[in-house]
Length: 349
Ligand SMILES: [Zn+2]
Ligand SMILES: [Zn+2]
Image (spheres, protein in one colour):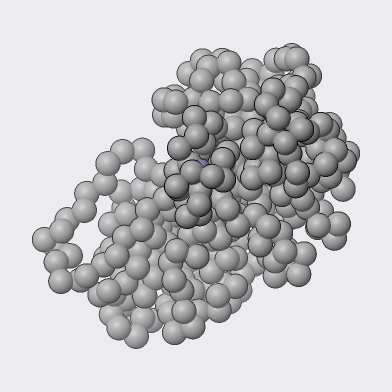
């Protein structure tokens, strides 16, 4: 089968590999229908994910149809359409029992797919702990609607859940990339008093204006004054930092009102400065990433109910043999790209 493979730093190539098989009774093999490219894939390509194993198939955001299951798998059967979770988790350890599946202590726990074990930018993928890692897609939900459930939509949903957003809140989202947009949709579900989206890229700002007219948009140079003016108590009540630059990290705590919650979803290239003397007395609560991807069923139910729909984020579609061109477009942010879908051979529904 065809598999997009991390060969060495800076080099991904489309290679021919054997079709994966069930190795453990808790495994499933999924025929991939649609896969996507995530910024984390670019981090692997550029060598900033040291635990990524050369030779692995990349891709951790995908939907498909179950092909085979191990004897111990009970929640999915061959033929089921499924969303694949970015995280592998055992469901039994201390962290899993608390819902903190990102910190699953199993050797295969956490972000393994497309990083430490073969992922889904391929025709087939083996998913360990399939009872936890696969969620059946309701019949009324399309593959495109479900494509981001296991990764960026799970991230936005989790970030909103831990941000404790209420109806009186002014919520600031820093960054309107794909994960920022998923976070925005999940924030809107909570119906806070107002939502401000801060972004520097005019294409992304236009996208927010067109698709989410109830959100106010602003740019980093104006966001501090705007949140001071809009927030009833000297700033934003909740800040979700999804951009990941030193400037947005600084804005996150500067734009927050005293006693605000700041949820840092972003992944930074390096350490950030937390100037405690400057923020003394502000009594801020910081919560940090990465996602506990344990809400996939609830997210799919919200999609089925028409409350979440991220299909507009898919601005381009490529076939697996053309995946290098898809990466080129996504990485260089050409042609107004937000997200790319890659058709991997399974029949899309
Ligand atoms: Zn990702
Ligand atoms: Zn676990």
